Length: 178
Image 1: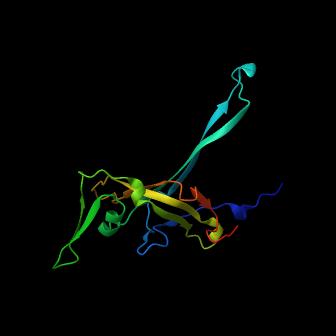
Image 2: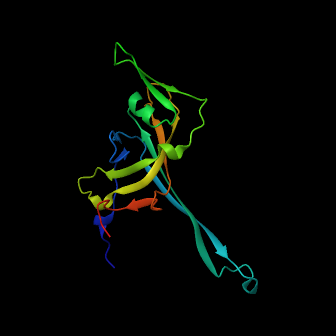
């Protein structure tokens, strides 16, 4: 059997949060690779007559996460991916900005969930290489190492939730119609 090496994919991608929104956030500069994880949980069905041998297995859940190690230090983008944060812009000098994170709030992440799309940047990539999390909320971990041999990486992880139609993830052309 011959291998189809044209189907072997690699390379960087861009990630867009709030696809179709009024101000989508695009992450195009990453370091260490964007990692998509899709997992299923299952339950084996057993009956006494077969001991511990499963007679079938049922999918009980699915999850999807997307880890984006964002390499640009951009406080406006950081503010949009830290739920409960506020971007403060100086009234007289708009180049002075700060992100304030309020620790006194109880945050429901579903309120921040929006569509997230991964698009490979390869010149050979097509719309069929796109991956969509239909509804995903960001969580952000900052672990900055200030040294001459490290970049400041903002680690944003998007956790997928089912949308209104129960869809979690789409792999392939987002414009394909049934």
